[in-house]
Length: 363
Image (cartoon, rainbow, N blue to C red; front, side, top):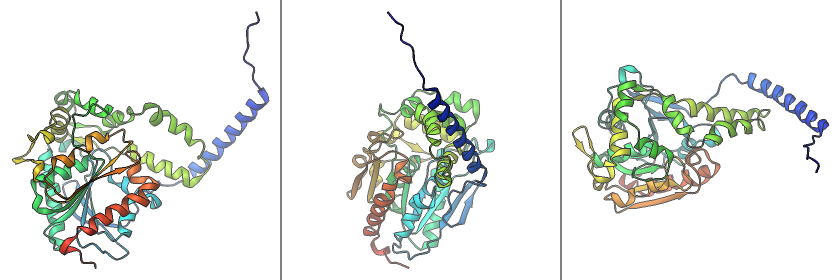
């Protein structure tokens, strides 16, 4: 019996190696020609600051047709410029083009001096003061809140504590029910020793948490995308888009210890928001107090915040005007996908315009 041997076409292998080498060389030249990775390029103005938190107001070059301003609240674990990652994939630019008046919070980069900043500080001080600033400067008793991921959880908490300040609430891919069994991040956080983690670090490095996100899809996020990069390395525009996303992924702020401690223990481990037992500072958080119109958006292929963690919000709030919106895509696609630009931003704008009420004047 003959032993089979693998045979190679040495000429083709050699040819492919030469082509790959040439592509790598040309790709290196493309990389060298890129001086900076531009993100968050939509013009905006710093209008308010408190400690490391900054509040920006976007400049709308068109006509504002909704008189109720929108405050966008992003998560603490990544940077808010994901919403404005590149000009042609910017939900910010898209919402502005539909006549909305936008503000956004930049939570900043906590240092060791910030280890005692708590969930109470983020909700009842920083977010509350930002909302009050916009209410006063825009002459609105109430404003719209649009919260994304953990920022949606924050916005929901705020709306439950201060319903008199919120006209409409929009949540995107927002974790609410932390008892879900799906999602590695939920299971990982549910079983982590928060006290040991916080007592050890004080301020938890962003790289530590980022490693948890990368473990959600280890092959795709750690290997596959870099192999795929070889297909675009010679195309400067496509390479720039890839590098913008890489910049965002690894731009992970450190986390203030006391806030993270409470968020892990009260949300992931005890699910207090759903149970109605959550207390932030001296404020009780009762979701039945969320009485304003609610647009709750989830992504049906979300591997970071499973739909089952988002959808229960509609059953828990006191709102009678509430809508559950399914976006066909993943967690990041909600913000940067071509479909989101065509579908989601117009849908959000239309929903908010219909509920502007007496503040619906344009200017």
